Every structure is written in C-alpha cells, then in structure tokens.
Image 1 (tube, rainbow, N blue to C red):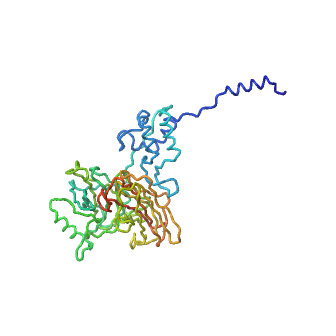
Image 2: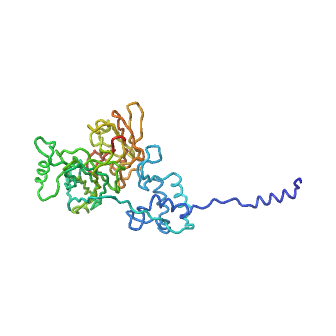
Image 3: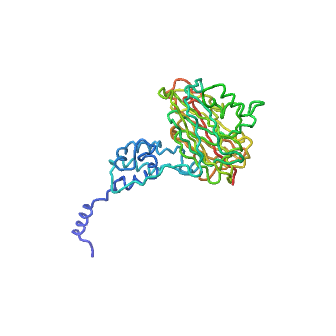
Length: 436
C-alpha cells in the first residue's frame, strides 16, 4: 500500500525521537584491570617493588592521571626496548600497544570510573628456580676514588668460591640482590682460574691479586676499573646486573662456561655522589644456577665504543637537548677468537643518567641491515637483559652499528666517557651462542 503523508510524518517523528546509541564508558574492571594484571601488578601490589599499589580500584583510581601519562611516555611499564615487531621480538615482552595506551588515557579523561568487578589477579614476582648456589660479597664500606673518570665512585673486586673443582660446569641463570641499592651501580661476574698465567709477565692471577690486596691492608678486595682488575686474565663475563634487572635465566639448554678450578670475581661499582651514602656498607648476594652440562655454550660481551675511544665524537657536548655519539664495532674484533658460527640470543643496553635513546643494528657484509634493539625512552633505574624469541643470525664480517642519544641541557662542560656514574657510557651488551 502506498505511504500516506500521515504515515510518513509519524515515521519521521519516531526516527527523530530515537536517541543515538552512546558509546560505552571506559571503566576499570572491564577495560583497565586486565591491562594492569598483565603489565603492572607484578610490581604494583602490596609488598611489591613499586612505591604504590594498582591492584585495587581505589588505589588505581588515585593514580589514573599519572598512570596515563607514564604509559604514554613509555616510562611504564619498564620495558625499554621497542617490541612491536619492527626491531626484534622479545621474550616476556611488556610493551603496551597503542590501543592499551589509549585505554589508560580515556579512562583517566572520563573520570576513572569503576564499573562492575571484583578483584585483580596478582602475579607472583619472578624468582630464580633450580639448584641454586648463593654467594656473597664481604660487608664492605666503599670509598670515593675520584679522578676525571670516576669522581664519586669506587670499583671493587671480590673473590668467592664456586663449585667448579674437577669439572667445567655452566652458569644457566643468576639473580643479583644488592645489599644497598642506593650505592650499587652494577655487578659483573668474571670466572678466573687463579693458577693461570696473568697478563703480567711471569706471574699467575693468584700472585697479581695477592699483590693488589697487599697494597690496601685492612680493606676487602682490590681496585678493578678494568674487568677483574689490572693484569688479571679472564675471558668473558658470565653475570651482568644493573638497577631494575630481576632474575636472569638463559634460554633452555644454553649456559656460560665456568672453567675448571675457577673462582668467581665480582666487580662491584659503587656510586657515592649522594653525601648521605658516605660510610654506608654493602653486602650483595649473587644467586647462581650452575649445571654440569648444556647443549650450547654461550658468551657474553659488554663493548662500549664510547668508553673505548671508537666513537664520533669522543666527548658529548654540553647544553644540548639532543646530541649523540656513534660508533661501529666489527663482530670479529668484538668476540675475539670465538668461532663465528653463532647468533645473538639477547641484548643488554646500558647508558647513564643523560641517556635518552639507543639504536643498535647489524650491518651485513652483503649490504643488508638488521635492527638489533631500539630504546626510545631510556631509564637508568630499569635495566635488563632482553632475550629474543627468535635469535638474530649474523656473519663473520658483519658490523655492530651503535648510536646513543643524550640530553645534556643541564651541563655546561663537555661530558667525558668514563666509569663513574656522572660520566657517560654507550654499551650495547650482547649474549651470543653457537647456532643450532
């Protein structure tokens, strides 16, 4: 039947009077709590390492605005390497999607509404599992050494026994628990065979260490700005810790060799720039998981082209909101005489307080390029060893390309490379293993 004017008018009234569907509000329990469970609550819970909780609506709502700002700046969650598939893919990735960042922003903008829900599922903090050997440095009071390259710092080495007698076991995981986090800048572990020849002609490592200890009677350990100390012969690091790093477990079947009859030497970097820390002691615990055998032997290398004198420029200019240093490191030089049929398992970026970004790539002999790591928002307090889901292959003639970007707007003098926390570094550490 044809429509009449009266029917058309009624239809128009009905259509005009039908309200359009309003978009649903973004609420805590439906939208935000699942993100907090996945990305935040391991630290932000009662007793966690974070300074406040996010595991209840009441707690999270108080921090809605700052949380939205922190995730937008990618300062939280503290996963520093870009992990969107454009530059490697990493295990245990804690990289928020753009959609997740927008969810936090919308929730805060709409008044941090609660919605319907009950509890946030808590995540247990990660711990090192397996057969663990606990080692400790002495109860030690560091002193400022001074100088242009460590104005407020001391590097001290300590020797501890580990179970390597009569065998060549492998380190497959570790966890460093600094006794005084306010002063411990980093901890690096080197296996040292005491009866091996040292780098000093005609002496053993044991003799060199004994001489250094005798030079400072009454103090534990010995000075060691260079690895395990000047003239102490060692190959590769097996432990590398900096603030923010939790337990490290190397990939299944992978381990770093601990030579037969070796001891562990821990290089501990103490920073005492805060006058309140002067005279404070530290006793750091290092937990080691040692296994008799592994399928693949791995090697760690911690190169710093800036500190090593390979960078352009050789010092960082002051008064710049964005300034960078660049260098290239041939892998054949970086890894010495290690067989070159291997792959990169993990990367460990490291800078100091002025660091802002780091870009690391592999320039291949055939002209290609592989992105190794990209740090967009550096935070000295949240460092870690980032394991790849799929290791990165490379060839004997490939070159590691590195750029570090700094903010020196608060400085009026050039910044020198150096060991001290007030100096700067540009260190793209790598963990490599023989290819399967």
